[in-house]
Amino acid sequence: MVVRVNGEPREIAAVTVADLVRELDHEGGFVAVALNTRVVRRAAWGETPIREGDAVEIVTPRQGG
Image 1 (spheres, rainbow, N blue to C red):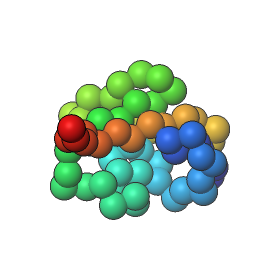
Image 2 (cartoon, rainbow, N blue to C red):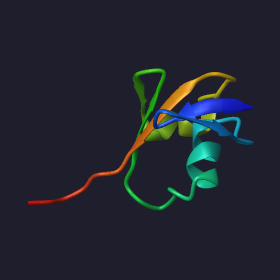
Image 3 (cartoon, rainbow, N blue to C red):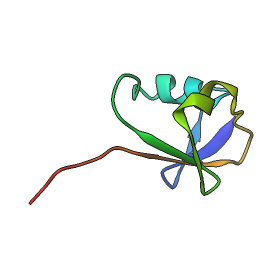
């Protein structure tokens, strides 16, 4: 299916937020995920479905100066 990940269309196999985080190799690090502008709690990733056309934002913290 095709979804928008961080503003870019992307073909994915994932069916849940947890699957998508694994598919995009973000597993194990600290990331925040929003699905259609709503933040998804990490505890709910495995039960939160992703559907065709959804917009997903994956954010990682950065430190700078």
